[in-house]
Length: 456
Image 1: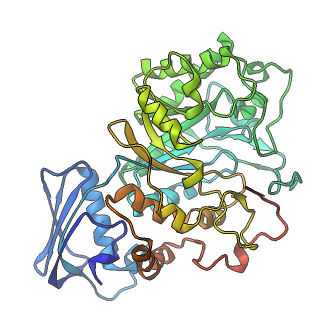
Image 2: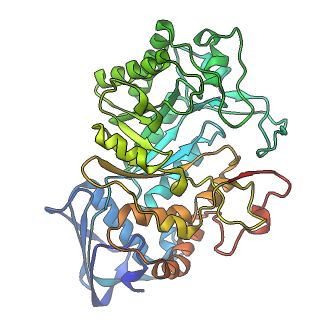
Image 3: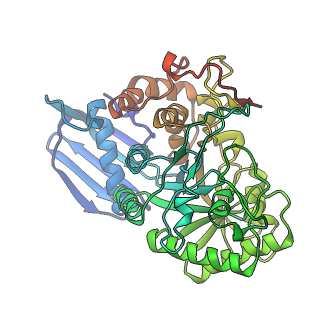
């Protein structure tokens, strides 16, 4: 095995003759290295791992696992001896924010499935999980002061089957307790991943409105069973503002993340009062010592405090956000929305959005540079991902390509990347039990015949 099998690519590699037994004792030492950086010195006498910080040590150990071969990614040893090649690897990431959004609101993912997804992010040296916890179709975390958010808002009687309007008639729901979320946060932190929670306001709020109709302007609401953009918005009154201050305060007790996301996207019919509602909640988070994050629509709100802006509609929104003094995470749907279809192939299941091939994702190059550019984030929206195998299929191996974009600087060559992926990284995904999309198209059980999509 050569160092070229690494994914993401190392910054600096000096191969040397010989090999080192695996597993082997690792001598860990602190060093003056960039944040999250590491230096591995591997010889037949052993391994020395120099780390810039705790994250650097974690990523160095991940690289050792990559070098040891696919079986190192299995949950238990298969026995036998393994070795890793001798040499020196010095490495650090391109971006400080290497994120992936997982939407657990549209289709709930169990705690065990979220922990597994954290493991998959860690295996790719991604370091932010943006957990989308609330939307029109479900509220996914317990708030003791407002129990109806989960007893009512956590369930819906049916879901739209694809994008054709037909309903599947199958109840769907679930939510996390406070201890569940504390466990997810701690599990992620042990793998150098920050969990950034998101409550979406003032739109995408039908689940909350169904639980507490007084938050809106109609006498009754239902948790939405459709996909798309609902016109139901929160009533931007003082009582609604107080309600969500209490909800966000509870969230802050569960999540230590410096950044807390509040949505702000897709609000048809929003008024100046709705925009002021978002601004006041952003100010509330600032007063609590946190940094609010919003989708790029919030740039139209006057008087915002400095925020993190998720630039999803296009990259020019990120450039505009940076010029207005906000930090930016680039996540444009034209490039890194992993719920979008992967090919024009007629067997592609529930084809949604634009075609984003593996090569397209690998070729993504953010338009923004400079100090306001925090990093990049892939998006896994789950309207049409109703089980964990569908998440696997849409996310991988495109998220593997995205991980290299997020980590590695310099020119990228898809012709060089593809054999590394095919010959070395896909076997790692096999060992991890990932039901990814094969490079030549879906397996028979990965198709969804007759379920309509919404291609662009």
